[in-house]
Length: 426
View: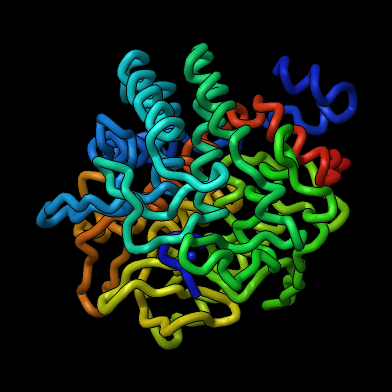
């Protein structure tokens, strides 16, 4: 399952050809002011430090989280955070935060460990692992969606570094994944598998962060998903304040994670334009939070955003609409940051407000995971996946770099083609 949310141009043209290549061509990034670009650069540079410092140089595995007030290094790594970390190495090199040799060597160490040492089952990896040894922790499951996030990072490195061993290792890791085993008796993929009980009883059956996983499976040339898998999961329409969109009873991150890598701009399948849908969902969430301002006066047009995060008491899976979890005035910076490409002006307004007004919400690695100004509570931790979605979406808004790089992979193009994506008429 998803971490913390358990109840969380040549290659393209030659492969796709003609009209499909045009449909998948890179779209221009949104225009932002020099001041906003400088702010996002500072944010990305801080985010990068997390992935540089909170990873094992030997294994490349990235810690699930880090305490920035009283550092106490944990051995708990997350394969999803590691996927974000691999992508961060590409952005870091592109932006000059790290030299090419240093980024390349970190990626090589990670891919070598993933290929030859990190325990896996039919190519899928355990959700949590010891950062130093790769040993399975917390009796965790072999996770379908977290493996997908890791694979997105692996393929981004393949396309960015253009290095023979990186390319070979990335393809080996991707091609080892047996998607057809995961879908042997159903087109709806299970959340995971454990040696003790077998497949978990939960299925990826409603719109969520699942899109990246299904598209990667469809794009496999070794153990592909059947095409009907893309059509099996439900797309339920919600309505709020007169706005209709596809959603779920889940936090805002479900509209963000697949779109950190897969470029849905200017294209749609038979059901939806998912980029536009995420723009609508972000705007709805903003309106929802402003309405909650009647109860929690910190929520305003300048300050909104709730997604799965830490809280003053425990980790919470919260958001809306419809209202999910015991919302208490907590704000989660990655909620707005993860939607930067969808609603740039509104999301930048939130992030600039937090940076300018709430000094304790900022740390060495950017924003802390969450804070509650009504209760004067500021988290002591940053969380890898939330820092990751912040960094990737900031870069996608600025340059579209992650989209352009990831979509050079024929696996990504093949997956979207198998799902029936086509160009949207202007």
